[in-house]
Image: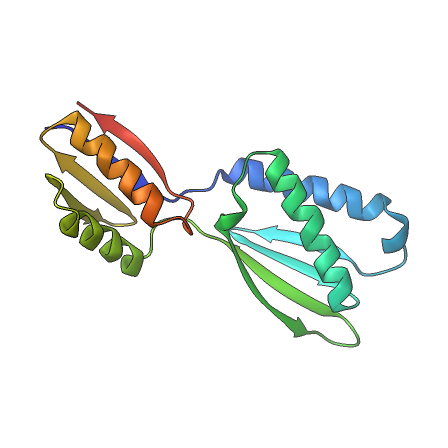
Length: 161
């Protein structure tokens, strides 16, 4: 029976390279000289550190440009609020989304059920497996999911006939 998996996975190697390139640019830019401006990556969390909210915004812009150059969708970023640190420093934590949350997976499953297509969606950990009788139905399901879930950077893999 034909099937495919709907996943939401960022390429962490490209994210790491983008963070490294951002760090390199921060150290060479004149307007960041003598400031605590920095970006750190631990697991799937990036921490932006700066003097003021304006500096954090600039670092975030540089990061978004580097991610875009490496073909990493910026919708993977879950941007947190700006927090005060000791002294006059501020920081912002940005998480990289990986996997489909159970709430969104249920939404995708409900969308497939309501669409009247002859496909079924099954939630498996952090992905949704869609199975159907015909390849055309699966391709229609892909188009429907892409259209309705535009705010998520979904991709489809493991397509089997």
